[in-house]
Image 1: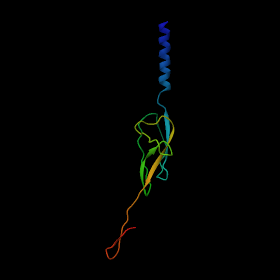
Image 2 (image 1 turned 180 degrees about the vertical axis):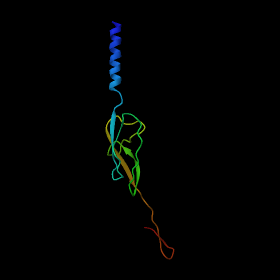
Image 3 (image 1 turned 45 degrees about the vertical axis):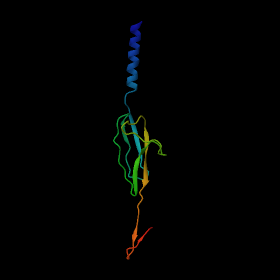
Image 4 (image 1 turned 60 degrees about the vertical axis):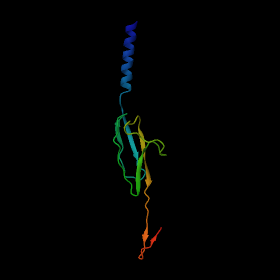
Length: 108
């Protein structure tokens, strides 16, 4: 009786390993006004190289799994499913000062 159970468990284990094998997942990038990035297809749970995007007048904050920027994406952990990542931006702020001909500094 032990031998048939061992064979059954071995076969079941082999099926589980095959079913859990790495599959490909597609990652889309919503740059929210930044330079476009093409979607990539990668192996599930494999580390992904973080893409770079730029946007004039803004500083890039990071890639998020949701459009509300609640969950930051971990590129080292990879993806478990097809996903769209969203770029978060912060508008650049500048301080201006004006100097007149008589060296008087004016505040904006």
